[in-house]
Length: 268
Image: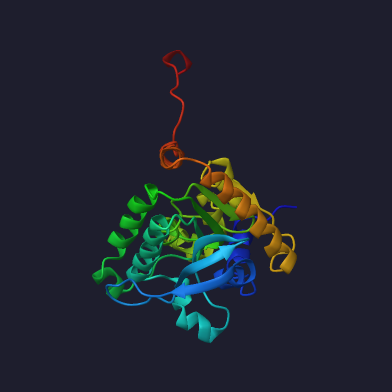
């Protein structure tokens, strides 16, 4: 029996769910973390660096929530500041220069909405990422491994393909926030979750996600091994495209979002 939308939300937020660092340490070899945005600071909510995947040099970037209370505070609960998005973009530009594919692991309830983040240009940092990623001349694969909240998730999700774990979510707002706005009652989060169509199945139906990944064996060595092979195969296929083919395909992928067929007048 499939989960309800809000059950998927709770599973996406579960404390025992593997975080980005779990995937990075289990799937990639020789990971070397790089720090800082060269403008303000290093954002610990975003972990990024260079690694190898079955012998292929790659750049991997993940939004990290942490597992323990201490880790979650250190990682700002996976809510990136603008310097995090600028660090991610710096690493993506570096990947483009050295022709390394980019893998993004997304797990955030949203970008940090503190006063300091707004003063340092949170909205602009995300917007620049969207623009730059859309034209990045190297393959980009984004995988939603937990929560995909609003622009905070989108800032690392303009990719050639977007994959979602079956109990991950992708939404413009949290169910609680939506319920508080629509009905002035955050306890109606389950109703809001159904309305938001935020599940991986919904995203696949709308063409927002390209593939939904099973969670059978999630967190096991066998699971990471199988997923790493799948990622390598996809990156090999994308790397065979010319730069023009790659960017044009990515452009068309996003342009078709929200497209609809014109209804003939006689059908009205």
